[in-house]
Length: 177
Picture 1: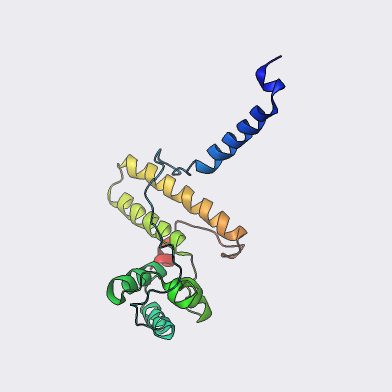
Picture 2: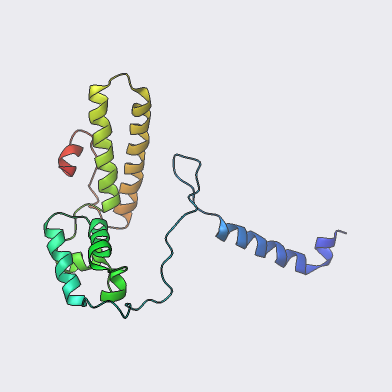
């Protein structure tokens, strides 16, 4: 009889290691071998810093003003961080930028990551019209469009996109214009 069968603690140890390995493994990129180790480190304290003098209502007004100018939620966040010293909007307003925009009816129709992928696909397709023999960009366009289809499938399931929404390369330039 083996040592594993006689001692039940081995079975528990194996289960713990499997659970640890499953939790510690980082999700890889879709079309490259990288794992992406870097990431942002948010402050432990979730309340607004004491030195920040801007109020929640002022931040909401700034967010609405910038959204009306056509800025995306991430661009608004960068501008608030750099120009107004607001590190985390959620710590001051108790609500994220996109939720504030949705509350005011200013949220973008397409999710931002999907919008950026479509914009990238349109620019690569435009490049392909000028450079017909560029086979590498043709391959990259296939990868970009497969990411668009995968993301669209997720957003349809999450009900953030209409169930009949479909990516079409011919009409994609009108989506990002």
